Image (cartoon, rainbow, N blue to C red; front, side):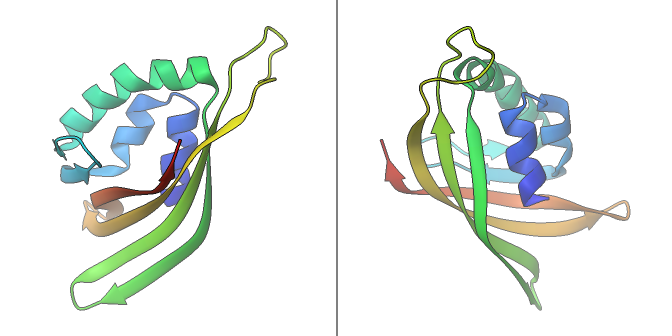
Length: 127
């Protein structure tokens, strides 16, 4: 699911991205107000993914850890983000690292499927 989070974001799949979240999910973002609920997450995705596609963003997920406790499943992972502009060749000729983040997630079952109930993004490094 965490890899799908990055994949759908990088490929501009706003509806598939939002579907990863529970209807009452919370997305905690650094320096911004939290997004409350799947619909708010979808609205944000639709408005920001166009920029992501234009800049050819790429998020690489690494150091994924899944924890299971009495409070339910959760995970942490690093994400290293890159972006670059399409120089007309169909691929980025100008790839730059943008930042390194920690993703902290909580999950819950919704109608028999696991969904993200809380996602928190923390910057470790930012350009």
